[in-house]
Length: 361
Image (cartoon, rainbow, N blue to C red; front, side, top):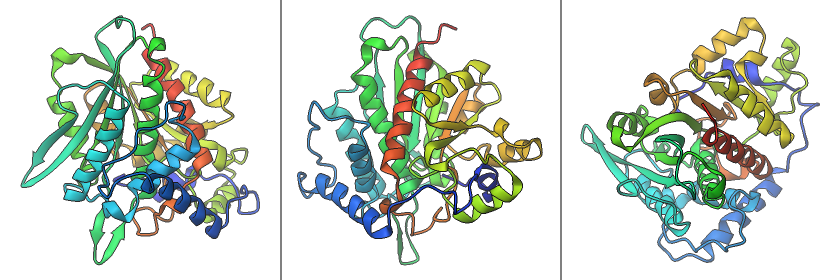
């Protein structure tokens, strides 16, 4: 993610250290992530993009699968998936192989290269078609960027939260939708954007070059940093407590949501209904004190891949954990992801995307 200001994180923080939920110890978390990675690595070849076919009964949005995928993408094998690097290309190939194994549809080539200046990156695109004929030529877009900072100054920035987490969840949601195609009315386009960290290059290219004859976009859902509790910073919990902000919110059972200005009111109601069904709290800027509301919205505006869609008139939904102290640091590692929370958020996002697909208007 390009950056979500710390003040926005402070405004969404909500509990003191004493009130915070129990978290696994570092050693337990490291073991959990290590086991998840081993489950993937033990059954694949030496080529990172060669991944075994998931079992037919495997839950694509189950905690083990989501954690394994995020851990794999954030492993040293991909060297931090630096934007417009060979490591980013290898990550794109792995994502494409997962989509192919689930037999998701295509729109042109699965991997779609694009250039900017002397650099080349690529988007990875899939399409989930309703099992019966679509009622109209509009599509819902689900997106997440898969690149990160790569190797800088002798350090490797693995980017587990930013944005291996969003990539893993988007991949799981796409597979879950493919298995529920009979319930869709609009097709769902799933796009994994490259070179987000260099200025939203992938999403800008995608919006700018999308052929109008392929259908219009009715809504766009963006996932960026979705694998940790809401604003995962104990100091911010304490500060927020002093400010009296959202004291009733458990950050380990919540997700931040930002709607575009042109999003209809029904989007908020849809999100609230689907998240509450899973005992997950959706936190909107509107839930904040009025003095912070407009500031948070302006600070988060234009900072991830939903922005080019919003600028072109498409209503957007942005799901995120908000910032943590590990944002754009080498300490953003897989053992800090919350697999249970990722699975709960993924289930809610499946329902939200399904609801957007079935909207009558």
